[in-house]
Amino acid sequence: MKLFTSKLLFLTIVIIAFSSCEKKPKENKPEKNIASKPNVILFVADDHGTDALGCYGNKVIQTPNLDKLASEGTLFNNAYCTSASCAASRSVILSGKYGHATGSYGHVHDYHHFSTFDSETSLPLIMEEAGYETARIGKYHVAPEKVYHFNTVLEADPRNTVEMADKCKDVLASEKPFFLYFCTDDPHRGHPFEPEQWDTPNSFGNKTEGYAGVENIVYDPKDVLVPSFLPDTKQSREEIAQYYQSVSRIDQGFGKLMKMLKDTGKDKNTVVIYISDNGMAFPGAKTTVSEPGIKLPCIIKDPTNGVKGIANEAMISWVDLTPTILDMADIHYDKEQFHGKSFNAIVDKTKPEGWNEIYASHTFHEITMYYPMRVVRSGDYKLIWNIAWRLEYPFASDLWASSTWQGIYRNKIEYFGPRKVEDYLFRPEFELYDLSKDPDERNNLVGNKDFEEKLESLKTKLKGFQRKTKDPWMIMWDHDSSIQGTGVNL
Figure 1: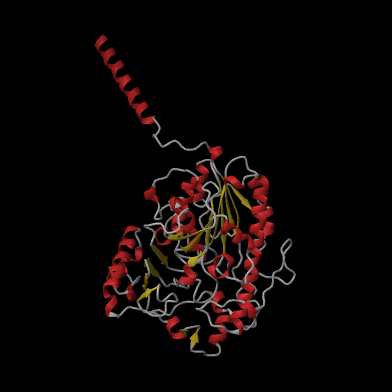
Figure 2: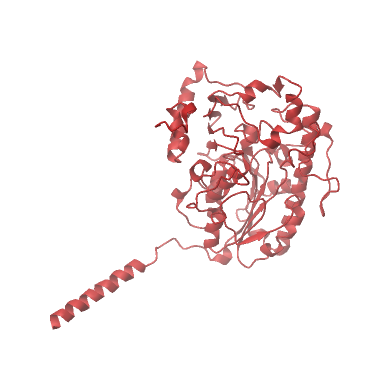
């Protein structure tokens, strides 16, 4: 009996000891005290290209508050979204992963109905878990809510950024560190079929009566700067003037938000990031992987690093934003869980080494717009793979209805800007450009024997990217895209 009792006692001690080991918390690097962590404001415009900002060289448009942000922080000259489509791009911003790997292939609203897989996590969830107050206001455009959940949802007219700023007062006054996701509807086009007259410019959300608290800054079409990829026509100038007005409305709301932040005394401990989801809402930019569609503004002010007025040449991508913000907030994470990498360590640099390559992945915009494209830019060279190249290039409904496009289409004009309409609508399988000599992407080097080695090198990089990120469209390298989805054993 005594032997049995001794064995039982020994077994009990072993079990207790084992249980203690099991329950011992993982030893992580100690995090900052939550109260000392920086606040983060991620301000996302809708369809705003680098073409319409004073700090990026436009001498006509009035954007004094955003220009001031650039003078007080870092302006990135080579910042890229991964897909020039609203919902797909926003999913990447908040997940740190390419949309082809998360199910975010295109729009989430109405009948489009694409959605991120339930198993994914996101920046707001991670920041909430780390003790942050998370809040969003304005355009959301991601799904499902449980993946992209914010503690607080604020309501305001997403076309009136001054009103939006006012609604953020309580968030800015939060006793906890906060993450504010501030997303405007500007300068997205207004309803694509209003007005009904095809040659009347879209409003871009502008109203004759204006918006409360916002100065109506109106531009003369003859003064605007027409980007080189667009036709210089009466219609394009009128629409660009409306676009500028919408951008100036953003700038005023941004300025109001910065003033409110300063009034709280938290401006010295708040990281402010300004970006756009994709390029301007004109054919040749939005929904394409051309430079005007994916090369975007990115301005970051981190008052803790003392950087002011730097222009950074690093190639960064929206897939890098989530890990970068987590680093800025000193929140620890598994670096392998994201496709992007943090660029926090190079925000204060001008030409950092090792940042000369980005990738892009576009599959849908609207549900009817299936046209998968994959892109690698490495140094000066850019390769585009038009996976479904046999199809006619699709139009977003608002771009199709634009007077800029209709003026060309209805008058049967051969060229849309410098490019033939036929070439815009029907694209080759591969496009290779040397952006140092051909920034407008007009001279396709595929077929040029001098660039055969470069073409194969970039194809290899693209395949490696797709393999690493588990891109379902990887199978199309070795099989005819015309049989995709037919049930044939690929």
